[in-house]
Image 1 (tube, one colour):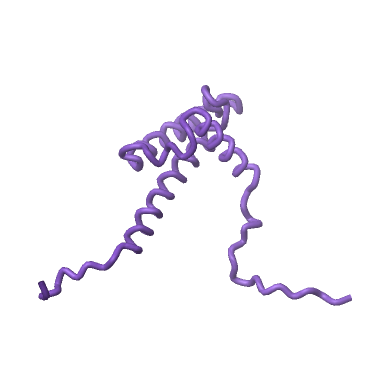
Image 2: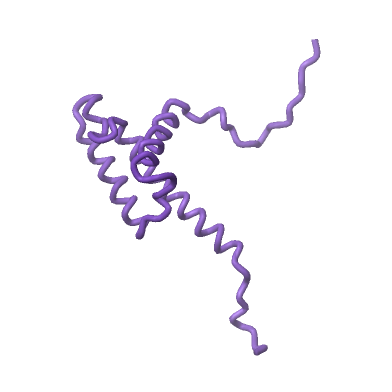
Length: 115
Protein backbone atom coordinates (compact mmCIF):
# COMPACT_ATOMS: atom_id res chain seq x y z
CA UNK A 1 0.00 0.00 0.00
CA UNK A 2 1.34 3.43 -0.94
CA UNK A 3 1.66 6.15 1.67
CA UNK A 4 0.33 9.53 0.71
CA UNK A 5 2.55 12.56 0.69
CA UNK A 6 1.49 15.88 2.21
CA UNK A 7 3.84 18.86 2.38
CA UNK A 8 2.62 20.51 5.58
CA UNK A 9 5.81 20.84 7.60
CA UNK A 10 6.21 24.30 9.10
CA UNK A 11 2.55 25.20 8.53
CA UNK A 12 0.18 26.40 11.25
CA UNK A 13 -1.21 23.56 13.40
CA UNK A 14 -4.93 24.34 13.61
CA UNK A 15 -5.46 20.84 14.97
CA UNK A 16 -3.93 22.04 18.27
CA UNK A 17 -6.81 24.45 18.94
CA UNK A 18 -8.75 23.47 22.11
CA UNK A 19 -12.21 23.16 20.53
CA UNK A 20 -14.22 22.97 23.77
CA UNK A 21 -12.76 26.29 24.92
CA UNK A 22 -13.30 27.86 21.49
CA UNK A 23 -16.92 26.69 21.58
CA UNK A 24 -17.43 28.54 24.87
CA UNK A 25 -15.95 31.71 23.36
CA UNK A 26 -18.30 31.37 20.37
CA UNK A 27 -21.23 31.07 22.79
CA UNK A 28 -20.18 34.33 24.47
CA UNK A 29 -19.85 35.99 21.06
CA UNK A 30 -23.33 34.74 20.11
CA UNK A 31 -24.77 36.00 23.40
CA UNK A 32 -23.20 39.41 22.79
CA UNK A 33 -24.43 39.55 19.20
CA UNK A 34 -27.97 38.76 20.34
CA UNK A 35 -27.80 41.42 23.04
CA UNK A 36 -25.94 44.22 21.23
CA UNK A 37 -25.90 43.29 17.52
CA UNK A 38 -23.28 41.65 15.33
CA UNK A 39 -19.78 43.05 15.82
CA UNK A 40 -21.06 45.92 17.94
CA UNK A 41 -17.80 45.74 19.89
CA UNK A 42 -16.06 47.43 16.95
CA UNK A 43 -18.09 50.59 17.57
CA UNK A 44 -17.20 50.98 21.26
CA UNK A 45 -15.28 54.16 22.02
CA UNK A 46 -11.98 53.71 23.87
CA UNK A 47 -12.17 50.04 22.90
CA UNK A 48 -8.79 49.01 24.29
CA UNK A 49 -9.26 50.66 27.66
CA UNK A 50 -12.85 49.51 28.15
CA UNK A 51 -12.30 45.91 27.08
CA UNK A 52 -9.15 45.71 29.21
CA UNK A 53 -11.28 46.74 32.20
CA UNK A 54 -14.00 44.23 31.28
CA UNK A 55 -11.40 41.49 30.80
CA UNK A 56 -9.96 42.14 34.24
CA UNK A 57 -13.43 42.18 35.85
CA UNK A 58 -14.08 38.71 34.42
CA UNK A 59 -10.63 37.55 35.51
CA UNK A 60 -11.24 38.74 39.07
CA UNK A 61 -14.73 37.19 39.18
CA UNK A 62 -13.17 33.91 38.05
CA UNK A 63 -10.31 34.16 40.56
CA UNK A 64 -12.78 34.72 43.40
CA UNK A 65 -15.18 31.97 42.33
CA UNK A 66 -15.57 29.19 44.86
CA UNK A 67 -17.05 26.49 42.67
CA UNK A 68 -17.95 25.69 39.06
CA UNK A 69 -21.31 27.50 39.10
CA UNK A 70 -19.72 30.59 40.61
CA UNK A 71 -17.22 30.69 37.71
CA UNK A 72 -20.04 31.59 35.34
CA UNK A 73 -21.23 35.08 34.48
CA UNK A 74 -24.55 35.89 36.18
CA UNK A 75 -26.22 37.32 33.08
CA UNK A 76 -25.09 34.91 30.35
CA UNK A 77 -24.47 31.80 32.45
CA UNK A 78 -21.22 31.33 30.52
CA UNK A 79 -17.73 30.95 31.96
CA UNK A 80 -15.98 34.14 33.04
CA UNK A 81 -12.80 33.07 31.26
CA UNK A 82 -14.71 32.76 27.97
CA UNK A 83 -15.92 36.34 28.48
CA UNK A 84 -12.36 37.42 29.29
CA UNK A 85 -11.03 35.76 26.15
CA UNK A 86 -13.63 37.60 24.05
CA UNK A 87 -12.52 40.91 25.55
CA UNK A 88 -8.88 40.06 24.85
CA UNK A 89 -9.72 38.94 21.29
CA UNK A 90 -11.46 42.26 20.66
CA UNK A 91 -8.37 44.12 21.84
CA UNK A 92 -6.04 41.95 19.78
CA UNK A 93 -8.17 42.23 16.64
CA UNK A 94 -8.37 46.00 17.08
CA UNK A 95 -4.59 46.19 17.46
CA UNK A 96 -4.00 44.00 14.40
CA UNK A 97 -6.46 46.04 12.34
CA UNK A 98 -4.76 49.28 13.32
CA UNK A 99 -1.38 47.84 12.34
CA UNK A 100 -2.78 46.50 9.09
CA UNK A 101 -4.25 49.87 8.21
CA UNK A 102 -0.97 51.59 9.01
CA UNK A 103 0.91 49.06 6.88
CA UNK A 104 -1.41 49.76 3.93
CA UNK A 105 -1.39 53.54 4.31
CA UNK A 106 0.47 55.38 1.55
CA UNK A 107 3.96 56.39 2.58
CA UNK A 108 4.43 60.04 3.43
CA UNK A 109 7.78 61.48 2.61
CA UNK A 110 8.12 64.25 5.17
CA UNK A 111 11.77 64.73 4.24
CA UNK A 112 10.95 65.59 0.67
CA UNK A 113 12.05 69.07 -0.39
CA UNK A 114 9.78 69.10 -3.42
CA UNK A 115 6.64 71.24 -3.07
